[in-house]
Length: 302
Image (cartoon, rainbow, N blue to C red; front, side):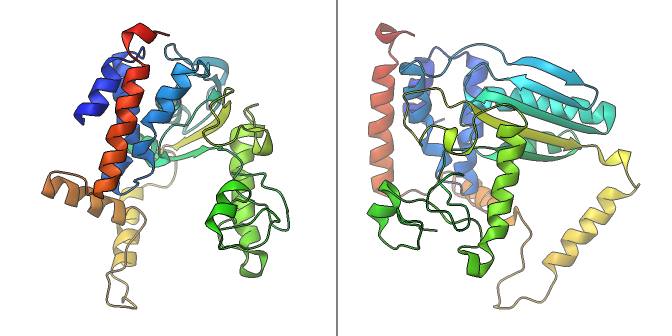
């Protein structure tokens, strides 16, 4: 862990075991997901402003053999996420499928981290989370689900307008490019996370980094024990992966399967012993973390 992040963590009221989970969930930077690794400041600010609880344990509110509803107790997202994924894995091992939905959670890093945890236990997994309203539903003039759209819901290349008044197109872009399919995927996530779990959803979620009210994010974790289905899954899965990778490339670059780019980036980080950043990013990160450490000093206890 970088010294400045270790300093911030050591002065935090969050328990050590939870700090480890939080840092690991943010280490998507090692896999090329640069945005997540810079969010520890947001976590610290939410604790400092008392809109997020620094300590506690998620609570199971409702439970059946293959499902559970979890109250995140407004704890840090990685704490809730690890609790829920562990529970989903346990249920999948016992019932074949484990479906856990959480409410009253917060930003939890990258979904891939939780999936990798499940894979360590030999189960398939999916993880979903709601977020601040950033995406414009197809034909809508207002952001309700969370590439560039202006304040009027029309395509824009004005970055200032997009950031201040606009939002994001669904996956696929505008309706002409079948963006409504991406809108459908976004709606599915909101239903799984917010509507099903009783958390805030869509436009009811606070704005990104507003830091004035609890986020009440909904999250969903699904695990599947492949042993509950047709035998020989691992062999067929490897055959599928090999088939995709060995397809003739269109531009000379090797055909990849999902996760290959992240794995190769992680291997390069391991090889070179560090994560490549622009110098300005390093300076900004150090400045922000020092500021966060000052705000979480013992004199400013929760």
